[in-house]
Image 1 (cartoon, rainbow, N blue to C red):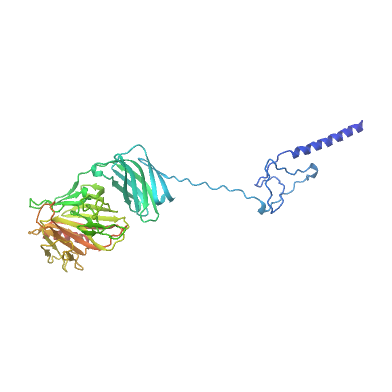
Image 2: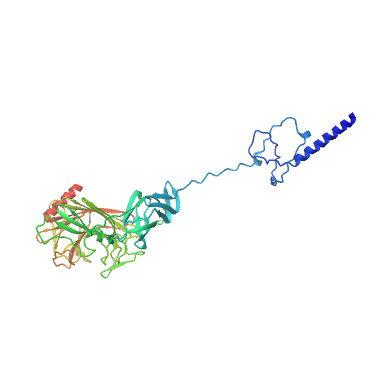
Length: 508
């Protein structure tokens, strides 16, 4: 009986051992974890031959029987570095770039940038600022606040009346600069709506950096055509339809009741205004005037066809008037130039002070030319030209009188060279009683003067006129702003001279 029990027990143990081995073979095991843990691990054989990948579902680990398992836990063997797979690093998240700017009237989204750093977009061709408006805004003036590293040409797309309209503008470089412009057709009470986008390009062809800081639109009142500054001595009229040039100067101390406006304003080429001469070479297409080929000639008032230059912006105060215009090209018809002109007009006692500035965006190359600083046209009645060209400036030395001057065009006798060292460079047109109007531009080289169709008329709209332009010779360079100041006064020749001497001494 005991023998039978022992045999049965032995058979039971053998059966149990056999079942445990089969269960281990059929169990799925976890794949090796790359990171080291404190748990002991089975060392991996070193091999330079790649081991074929075995899927989790088919991988069968080798299993040790209880008899082969050592009693003591062995120290984990370090796997050589060359066979240990490196952890996969997670790339840093891409920084979020907000390509939008929220302004009062909507949200701008920026497109076609070459890059962005420190809030400045690097722009190449057709950098776009697309506007999603909050509602519909009517406007006749828009204002950009911006930062730019170079000169830019821009186009703003909006609706003008019932039609889509594209308006060209130019930006100078600077930090937090403000550019404002009236819409085309401003003086015809046109108003814009539905701004779609603004597109910018670098004029010089290279990339530039740009940041839009703010954008606003406004409705401003349309002023009358001619606005005035006035004090006890003078009344000065600025013609907003002719580029903001001076079209009216009245001497309020004059006793001649028939003598009102001393300037000639017969057309857009007369007046007192900025005018400059540039290239005649391609890519510029030469103009024509009075049968002559004509160079690039931005004129503040307008062109030879009496078309008027656009007023870009203005500020009208009691103390001064500020004007910015985009002049037309004199030798063409209704052709805007790639330039802005600015004027600031002030009255200081007996003196009319005019600060001038221009900047050209054309990129044209030109030779040095005589430049009018400014072009100055008076009524035919003031028939005699007076100036000083001696060796004793501002010492009441003898003046030079030129009567019966001919037309200045193509006339070498109309050029009066300023003597070296002469700082008394004022001049005047006067009547038979030495009464008239004077002009003083410091640091000029030549006085160009003459009469056209002389008939002695006091009518400012008469075709006859007398002219003078203080000249300086220089190249009209693109992308280089130019500034200068001139002074005007009226009265007897002695009063004119004394007033300009006071100006000169104050500036010295």
